[in-house]
Length: 219
Picture (cartoon, rainbow, N blue to C red):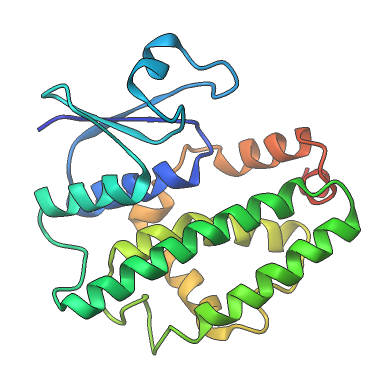
């Protein structure tokens, strides 16, 4: 089976699929597009006009990162979802929670002024506390086993580490379990290699160009 992922170079959602594919050692290629000026062929296969899109050699197309990763997990061993049905459902719920946090993180990065940034930061921290309570002794979401939940949060935590290093917001200080989880994920080769070589530079330049209070301070 040959896979093609279609993405914007900074998309956190396609990064989830890249990590899963690398964990499974499955061959794939990535095609990056400009979401501000998407090609006609992309709009023809993406009904929501969003990335990621997964195209398989049979001609089939999937969209939405959680769906893509579920498909990849079901068709390429080893399984990255827990075997226990309740735990698997629990993971799916918290993967969705992570998607909402990515949205909150984006709003922080594009907040037009400090007051708006602080409101988004406070909302982020309130949601962050719920996540902290779900973690055990680590190093990963389900303990010793790396899972799709880890692929879902690694992009969020990679971006958060850059934000905290460049313009600290004390987003990890009150959540030691998440801080340890972040360190474990960012040390994992499949996570480090899931983005382009100059990812941090591109990330900073992109959000500085969006005109947000925090984004400008990352430059």
